[in-house]
Each structure stands twice: as C-alpha cells, then as structure tokens.
Image (cartoon, rainbow, N blue to C red; front, side):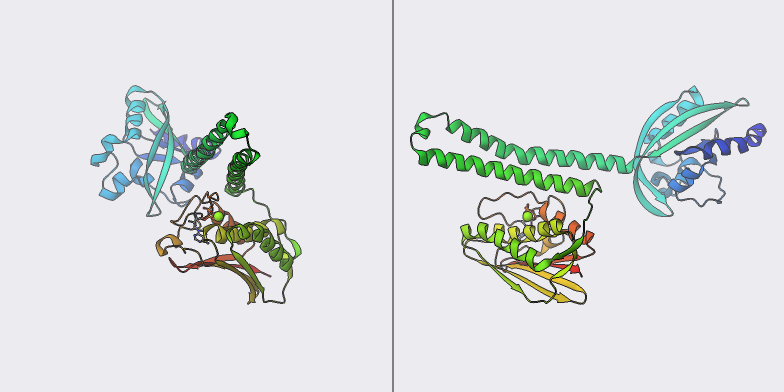
Length: 370
Ligand SMILES: Nc1ncnc2c1ncn2[C@@H]1O[C@H](COP(=O)(O)OP(=O)(O)O)[C@@H](O)[C@H]1O
Ligand SMILES: [Mg+2]
C-alpha cells in the first residue's frame, strides 16, 4: 500500500494525460485517485480532496437518493458496474464497455447520463486495485436515437406517396385509361402532385438536417426587403388563387434596405405564407403587414384559417410537430417548416411570435433587427 501511495505521483501524471475520465478504486471500493477529466465529468473542484466509496463520489442516484454508501443500497445488486468491480477484484478479469444509464447528482443537481465503463484489475504489492475508465456517451446516444427517429419518420412519410405513385403508374397500364387524352392527363397530374409532395418533403428534411448538424451558415448582405416581400407574395398568389384565397400586402414602413440573408429570409416568409394558404379554407383572406418597431422590421402574416389550439402553441416550433389543422387542398405537411423558420429567424438575431385561437385564424410575427 505504501509503495502504491509513493508511486501515486507517477500514476497521477500518467492519468493526467488521458482524455477519458480515469480513476483508481481500492479493494474496499473507495476511490483513491482520479484525473482531471474525472473531476470535470462529475463536477468536483480541481483541488477538492475526498475519500469515499465509488457511487458516493460519482453521485450515483442509488446511493445519494437513499443516503446509503455505495453497494449498500437495495438497488446496488442490479448495478452492472458492481459486477464488473467484483470480477476485477475477485477473478482479476477486465470488462469492457459496460453501459450505465442512470441519474447522477452532479453538484447536487440530478442529471441523466449514459456512461461507458471499462474496468481493469491492477495487481500491486500483493493487492488488487481497479482502474476504471469512464466515457460520457450521453450526447452520442441521444444523437443516435434522434437519427433513428428521423429515419423512421422519413420512411413513414415517403411510404404513402410512394405507394400512391405505384398505384397511379399501374393505372397507365390499362389501355382504357390511355384512350382519351383527358384521362391520361388526369393521371399524369396526380403523378406530378405526388412527386412534388415528395420533393417538398426531401427539401424540408435536407434543410432541417443542415440546421441539426450545426452547419447553418448565413450570408447576410444589404438587400431590398420590400422587393423580397413583394416577390414572395406574388409567388404565393399563384398558388392561393387556386383556392380563391386573396393575399393582401400592406408595407407600412420606410425601411426597405437592411442586412439579411436573402435566401434564408425568403424561405421564412415563404413558409409562413404557404402555411397561411395551406391551412385556410377556400375563399379566405391572408394579410401580410410590414411595420417597424424599436430597431426591428416587423412582418406579420395573418390568416382567417382554423387557428391553432392553445395547448399546441408552445409545441408549434418543435420539429415534426403537427397540430390538429390539416391542409385544405391536399398539400404536403412534414411538421418541419416552423422549426426551420424559427432557427433561421433566430440566426438573424430576430424572434418569431405566434398568436392564435381555435376558430379565429392565426398570426405569425417575425422581428428582424435592422
Ligand atoms: N397558419 C396556420 N394555421 C393553422 N395551423 C397552422 C398554421 N401554420 C402551422 N399550423 C400547424 O402547425 C403545424 C406545423 O407547421 P409546420 O412546421 O409549418 O409544418 P407543416 O406545414 O409541414 O405541417 C402544422 O402541421 C399545422 O397543424
Ligand atoms: Mg409549413
């Protein structure tokens, strides 16, 4: 033991050069040495000295919540790390990549973490110690499950239009459907709509992916905001006229030039306008108003559609969230549009607000700093 303590200096130097959290456990499950990443991971001050059992220093919820010493709480028999320590101490065997998903109390705050432990026996001076390497894989696991979720949604959302495509193509094999050009055109139109729908879906997913991967780059330049709004309104009028929906534009401010990313802000306005048209019943009005207020250009898009129930308002910007309102003209819906809009607006140091009640229409307001 004494020689172990004497050589501790060397050990500490060695462990300091490892990027993973590393610690040494003595045969009674007390932690006798840790490195800097360990202190960072479990929220211990750099200089803080301690002498306690494994789970108590790690802040394991089994020990902390019941005010037990590690291995003495009822749940400890279920602890896979306990088993790994036993194996190291009694059988002198290493175990690799034990996954532990649990709540840890870090600086007295409960935090859910997924940790990966590698446990190795170290024989020294007729005693067995345990070297433990801990990697925090919480973010990795979360990112992986998000990707799985995204993949599941993409597969689900593409399956319906794909089977519709196959169905419409099958119709073209019937000679009777090719007899009149009107019948053929009908089927071709349906085919085209489904393809457009799938295209929109892929566009949203790709945009969302750029944002999620942290690769969103703005390219702000001084631009003519009035021109941008006018052209977005005109483009959407082409679509809204099919539903007899009138889009009015009321540009009330003198400010027309300021710095913004033209492509991204076009996407923002287009998303809000297309939502207003998409969810409104035929024959309603959509009003776009641009004003200025305390250093911001304020753009609001108001519709006379079904509105959004109050309970959904706080979720409306969450990726993939869809409220009870459904498209009135068979348009596609991914639940990604507003999540993208919010990120793009905030990347411009702006903000977006929504006010709506079921049955009275919705109003989305974007504040962009000038
Ligand atoms: N103007 C609106 N009127 C009513 N409901 C809306 C409006 N805009 C958005 N929503 C609701 O919010 C949900 C999320 O919108 P969004 O993120 O743009 O996705 P998407 O339009 O692809 O479904 C929509 O599914 C819809 O239920
Ligand atoms: Mg949308």
